[in-house]
Length: 223
Image 1: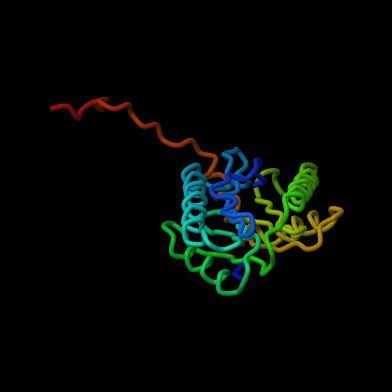
Image 2 (image 1 turned 30 degrees about the vertical axis):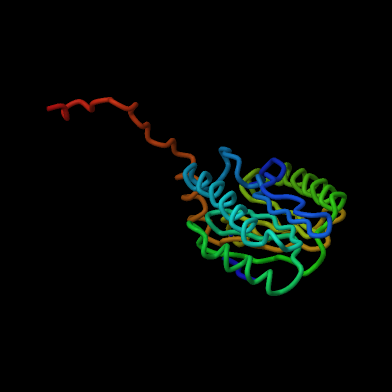
């Protein structure tokens, strides 16, 4: 698995669902990891890019795999896309990965799709509840800022995303692994030195430059 990828809030944005009773297709761009918050280490522009990528990839997968029984969740963080869910065979998994890699703006793909029947609504609800428990476990973890990493839960496996130092990554994995119900923790982090992480966080916290309203003339430029 490639190792080159906040604790977001929200449900999936459903783009395509239930082609037929025997061939359900669900491709969703997951809102977790996209809400704009102060502690996010991505710039506001990058966060918006990630939202756009999620929706674009989900739409492209929905179109390309419309005749196959798949359930795919799409998460983008720093333009690295994590695919989770279920597909019927290795060929479909590979195709989903290729489509994602070719999508505009995507810099890397982590393909964690399982070869299995689509999960049930009750199983997805259990994953949602488990993800909430994992997020709660991070609230009182002082070593890593709340909302500075992403958490995706699929089939009781927790995927951790974001730019972190090695120490932060190890702490985050340990915290998640201690939550009851978690079967496995998978690190999908991008790693940097503490200095790099601090600089990235400081840069992301800087306000974006104001854009003058349309028709505004900058002093000294009018002819």
